[in-house]
Image 1: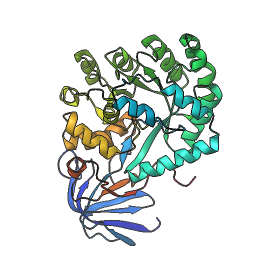
Image 2: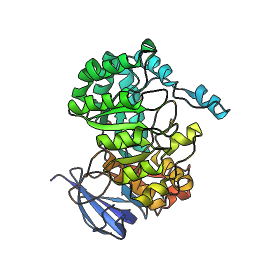
Image 3: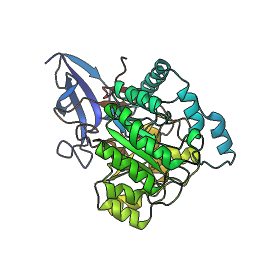
Image 4: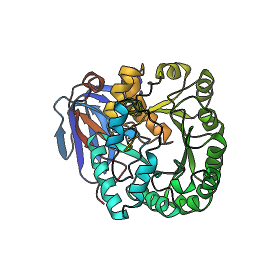
Length: 389
């Protein structure tokens, strides 16, 4: 083992390991964490010894956030669209085509530079694992390039060719689905772990989404699904039926949807910053949690409906407007995101696990909801993605 570092004088350490500390979050007070070779090698009382010492001076430390839903590969922005929406224009997802035009016209190296800059922002915001979707190329060549970029930066890469029907396929959605399931998937599948589809009015219906996900499964990819964002629909039931790792948005859930999720291993991933940005109603996470549904929080960082990478902001929204407790929201932003990615090694701090930690500029986790909008991330340690490209 190389040199070791002790992160010492931690007022409150959240481990998400109940066997390590108190309660479901495994909280240890007056703690220290010893790190070596980017792994946790010890958790215990303050004052442990190592080659180097980082005194956090009574701050709170928790596992790095796991953001299981982002769209970081894009060019341009849609600030004017946002301004119009704040003035009353409804959100319908149509701006995806505008971003697609800009992104298609941007060379790979420029896109890589944009993604790297966003990952620096993600890291500063305390997120140590991030999923990145394609979906702003919507052509065989562009989607293949974007899939390769997501893989190159060490993200959890997802193929989202079924994001929206591009302009050149207007009125021919089934033909476009054939392209997604055939040449586009073939070009992208070697770079990605997941496949996704936008099952929503104005995007793809249940039959089209099923075709995309089943083609991805045959190609060896895990399944994810956008669903029930703009209104009730068949997406949640489809996602559960196909065994999707997660169904994301879940703004509108019927009792039957919640019952299906609770009886399955599919995670309901909430994206509250999207509801904030689109003025959609916030979902009542309490209904799902009380029914036994596994939930996650993610940022959905994208230029149209949620241009934020702040998981702290998502936690504050979930506590304020989705009837979640602070501990439930933190769990959803860490372990929940890891579960949505079918990862057991992240979102928690345990001996032998990755040393992915977030140091808050606050003495306790409660400040994440107590002080919304304040830059509370003092330091982020470690990540699954690369910042050195």
